[in-house]
Length: 104
Image (cartoon, rainbow, N blue to C red; front, side):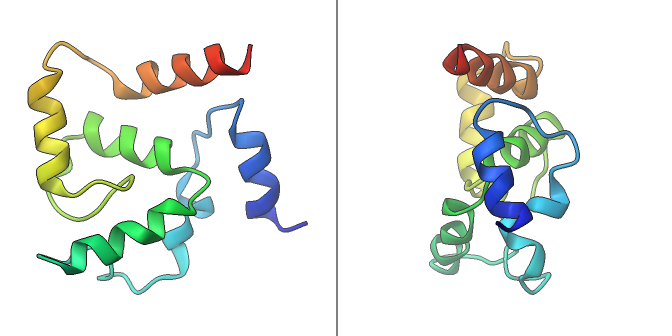
């Protein structure tokens, strides 16, 4: 079993701090996720099979990452999420707590 396949099983119950080496995009061209327009929808498809999509999204939201597709969301989608939830201090804590609750 590959490390990524194994991770996707374990991922369902634990939070991965060092998520980047396990990301589905790790073998993509560096600019593949920094596109505009319709190409963003294609870039988001990479995230659909990623075992660490929640970690990536939480990192992008918590760090207010402005450009690129992160965690399956475009910069516009992330800005909208941040506007809708201005009181959330840590998306990582929120997502991690949700994952723990679902595992129980």
